[in-house]
Image (cartoon, rainbow, N blue to C red; front, side):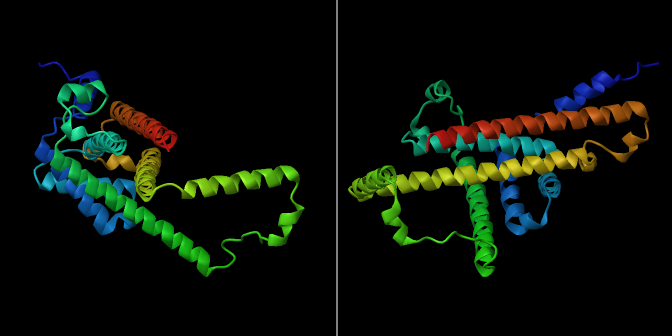
Length: 273
């Protein structure tokens, strides 16, 4: 009689499915599906629903990956994309560097330009939608006078300032006058850099929100609907429930790890502002 498969071997098999090989075509398919789903119905979907649809669409196109595998691949692609983007914004030229040079400065050794452009489309779409939601919130506040209460400003208070405050005001005025001497090209470059940095921050904030939703879905047990877990597993007793708990624990670890990585990137971006 052949030996029974142990839980350990099953666990190893499950973990081996976490990091499949992704071809360029597979990655492009994934990114294009992310773009399509987010453009069509992102606001109406939860984090889990969005990635479930993306995973199903990829499978229909021959890219058979689980929800978690698709999400991890996107996180990896975005991290590489973001490092390249920040390098180019600082005056570097990623596409003109050799593989060894890229590796030496901590950049992806290889990244297809078409794939980079596809990721860029997704990121710009995320930024535009985030900006639209922000404008909508401001619009609601303007429509409701009670939504935002600003303290009144009285110009007559100026003569009552203490000498120290007057000195601070004078310094600020001098600084403003000095800033006006900045050339138009320098101003444009500064504004461009600030806009790009703001875009990166908005995208990373969106990613943090997604990870928080993912953690909530795991804790509520909704993630048990994943492809690599079936209802029949629940009927196999305590061993399968233990495997489920282990998988959920792995997913939580992945989420917290991704949050930590995103926060590291966010710190790097904000420190360069």
